[in-house]
Image 1: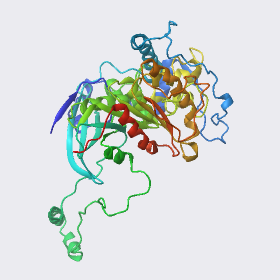
Image 2 (image 1 turned 135 degrees about the horizontal axis):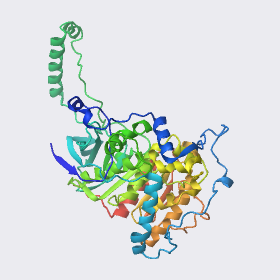
Image 3 (image 1 turned 45 degrees about the vertical axis):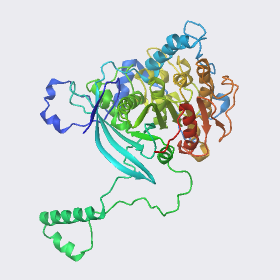
Image 4 (image 1 turned 90 degrees about the vertical axis):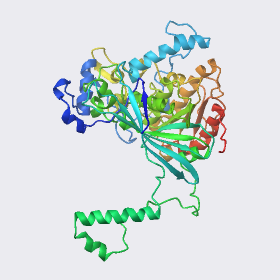
Length: 513
């Protein structure tokens, strides 16, 4: 089994009191705090001096506390922080001023107030290839690798974190190939199966073992002599008509000569508040509650992706300088954060990410800041809860008090190619996501792309003047791209536009083997 070691500031999670825990003297370590989500939420409120939070709006438009969908009320504080003005009031006129002065200011604000800081003491990650399988996805031969990234827990062995990932690379093209890393559930696409002869041997052995364990089972097998308890999984039918519509995104990537990696966010950090004292966040904190500037789940997931990239840089099947990041909804938020904070990712596809992603936080339309300071608080830094406070030692704050916003998060990705994707409310990409607020942020972010010599959407950066184009309008001529498809809460319909756009941006051409 090949082993690789990742030395990355990072985040990964899955909690379990492993079999080894029986051998661990737990008295040597701080006892892990086991909170419910409500208890953890209350603990952070106490740390921040918050007595009351404004409740988040309801997504049900007929509810008394429904979210605002009146455009006239959507921009209570329309003036965004200027991307190209430093905190001292200087205009940023050169790339050097951006990299040395303005960009670090934006990073500091986002880390302190919104997403939290990466700890300095994140332990190293050791990657191992658990399984390597040769498979066929349709007509495409692939190599699929099951990977485990074990986070060193020797400083606190009461919490175990193993990052799970599957890497799939086509073998019918000359490599190395670009890879799109996607947040999701890792699965082998088409596991190789035993031949009929091998299957017969497996069944004969299995029957013998069953009969040996329980002799009465022999009568059942005698009753059904042709029955085989072990059967082959349904395979690809080469003669079947192709399914209607576009192939799945993974198949589109492989057909275009790309590989893909699927990384499990929940193996990095649990997607709930009760898990915040476990996972990578809990491991680093030795099972204790967070402090207000500590990272939340979104930053933890993005750390895990960056650590996975450390492995991909060691794999000779992967073009390490052409690795992208993708996600939808909460994972779209994580994908954008990953692209913003980890400069080694070359391209991003950000799907329907809403508040905490591409949508302006200070907008009052659909999902609100109060939605993120309530039930979804664990995604963010503790400090972010202050912007939902109605009564606190510091008074009260709203999204309008934020020193930073999502247009600046997008700008951190510049000048790298960034494709912003949404669907339409009629098909399930709900108004709650505020597609227009995301478009405004993308328009404003374009100023950073232009400064750094890249192309944005090809329009002005006046986010209050530029109107969101109709669905199916492709703004794909620059490194900053926008397209709203006519599907729902997914980015799948945009893959057939993303792939050729990314090929152009990365100067990649598929070369048959």
